[in-house]
Length: 253
Image 1 (cartoon, rainbow, N blue to C red):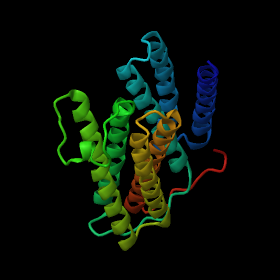
Image 2: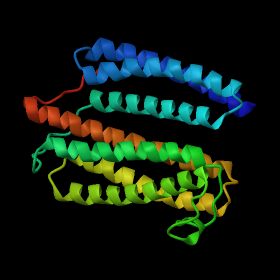
Image 3: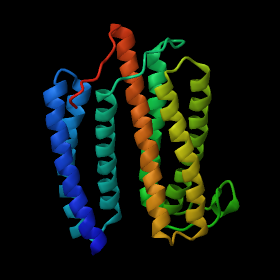
């Protein structure tokens, strides 16, 4: 009861802070759509989130509603991350081989993949399958059930995303990326590596630890937020490359 009560009051506080952020964005950055639009969108999405939260309670924590509730939460995180990054001073644009657009796409793919992985994790987090990192200690486990397929897809995507993040870090260090982008992508890689270990601990404890579940989810959200920030940063640098005008930050936001 205490956890639920605290959750609702924090949710209310987040709503108030989102409204004040939107007002501040309009006052100080009204000509910058990448600041104002996500700030106001966050307020709208938080309102939808409150309504879905009500459905979750009335639906006795139905799995599909819980996952939807989480997806909307991560949307709020992404929107506010964009506001923070876009309102700040972006790093100087870099002259990348082939231009900015391909790199922006690659980083965006990582962000989308992290979101999909997080959603799959929300479906299978309380369902135990022995063996780690391979299910049932085999490359191709018994996939006769939908739950097994979801679990297998989650682990497969986790492995592929880990390889892809490693690729981004290596390539990012070889090309003329601004230091901010390098740090965001590297930070996502480090958080992801730690989260892989937590995923193993989650299996070894037979999904019995609520603390591990919460920490695993929290780090997944950190990875998602860092990759959204990296994508936003590279979009801003791309705009700077096109316009030739540095995007400065207002001091009032």
